[in-house]
Length: 254
Image (cartoon, rainbow, N blue to C red; front, side, top):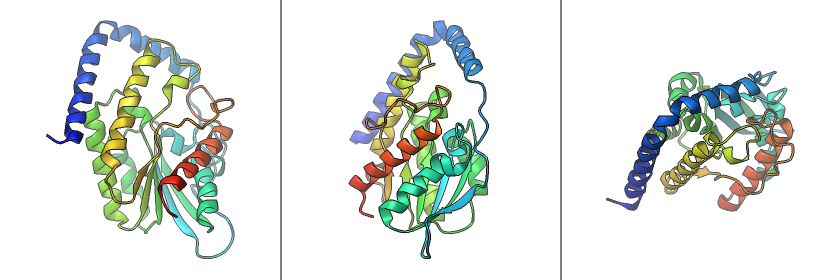
């Protein structure tokens, strides 16, 4: 068994042992989760067009962003002010070219649901860059390490088949430990799973060609980051996108 398979087996065992340990308090955790959802409410998706351009001039790079609620732009008024528009802005600065962007996001999707519900609507064109924003719902819905890895590898494989020459970026798993509205013990339980998913994806993307993962960040300021305690604010999206591009610049030569 190679090290990757060994780590996956270890994470899977931890997941199953943890699931068994919390089974007696599962009804309490369910109530906690419902209370958090009630406190947060449901933010609307970002408004405006789901495509645009940052920067002037010809020879624009093409960016496609796909994923969950952060890609749908919950917490921002428009996609220009949400993750996609902000990522396009900082990407444009890094590559010294304008960036044409398109986005397809949906609140609540896991990696599996992204394959089933969002990929069929991916534009039939070639993109230079793809950003995948997933992980939050796979944590919230308690996807096992084995399922998370299998679904993400399948998703990345489909994206690569559709865009053989694209550079694929993946945003971090959620920093649940910093959520101001998530109570204990559910916060620590979900944070432990988020860390496992983070380590998992870092491992299985390590040797993938032109696939780069932004791990759980340490350089994003928390003041003003959240719109509702879970989703980023417009300032949060800007800071997050800027730090992603800063990190990718250190790991990828534009």
